[in-house]
Amino acid sequence: MNKTTPIRSALTYVALAVITVLMLLPFVWVFFGSFKTQAEFFSDPGAWFPKSFQVQNYVGLFTNGGFGGYMLNSIVVSAIVVVCNVLFSSMAGYALAKLRFRGRAVIFPLVIASMIVPYVALFVPQFVIVVQLGLVNTLMAIALPLLVMPLSVFIMRQFAHGVPFELLEAARLDGAGEPRIFFRIFLPLTGPGLATVAILSFLSSWNNFLWPLVVAQSQDVYTAPVGLAVASQASNTIAFGVLLAGAMVVLLPILILFLFLQKYFIQGVAATGLK
Image (cartoon, rainbow, N blue to C red):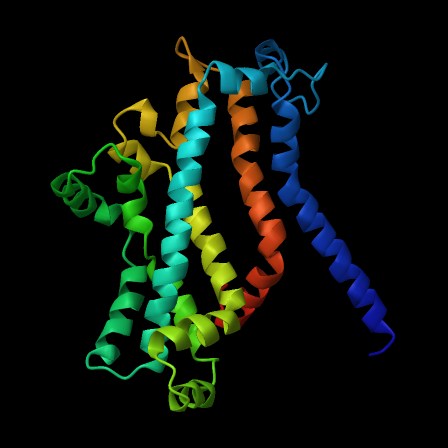
């Protein structure tokens, strides 16, 4: 068995390397494609490398397409979604795991059930609510359906179970109230869970296309995915270079967030058993 261990390890690393390369190939093609001219896409669509690196696609994306405003809208909406998910889902998870109250046994199954409801099935009731609240064509309307995600509540409840009851009881005996226990004891002990919620809620908001397309009725409130579809079109012709440049710009915040929080994100996924 010991003689085959190095061979198995080598094969494992080779397989992982091959899978990694295959997963990165589309991103590599998009990156190099963002520097191509429109003529190059028509003359040789399958070419990997541009004949000469041109930055006009990136310049035109922000100067002619107004993409900077779309990015700012996405940042504002995503910030609202992340902050609300981190705060409210951690409160809900703490309550469901550590507090005793009537109806707790019913609420959590409802949270789980809401996770399996198709997102598009909620479009009509959500839109009706947004209309009745007078929030149509606002950034708050875009953020509203994602303010508290069921998955975020589930993750924080799982992490809350890992916080010892004895620690919380000791704080209560010392006279600490529930708000102080929550902010001073519970939140610092659930850092990986908070990071996981932050990343998943950011991805859900940042990549959201269909709901902003429905609720945003003017370009002033378009988010980056919707704005990218608008900015890449000119005279009924898709500007492929601009489209790929926008894809790279939209991808950049996701990479930055994951690089800073990947350690906690991996811990959070492992602790909650997410696949």
